[in-house]
Image (cartoon, rainbow, N blue to C red; front, top):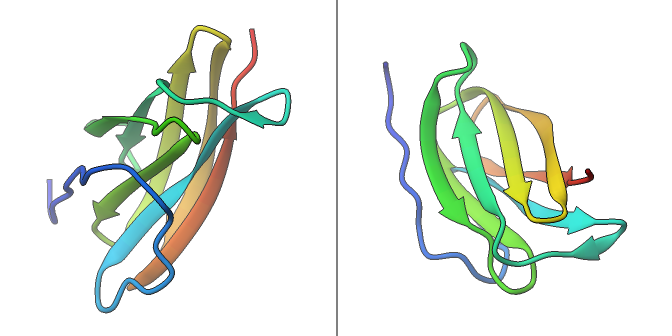
Length: 100
């Protein structure tokens, strides 16, 4: 696998990523943010790359390499996933809705 990823402490969304590729967003169930969801980052081939637990406000963040990513969330409310294309440095935001 080329490039690397890191799972930083979850918290308030970033607004400036500098020269980093940041994939971040919120996990929600029926429109309400949910904390404690297991959020996984999968690369373009579907391989597991990293996992974090969403903050109490449902926030998650990964530092990633450029490319196409799948963000998958699992919570007691259900599961869901979303796709994001992070072609270069910057903040790439994705919302993941979980449902049964």
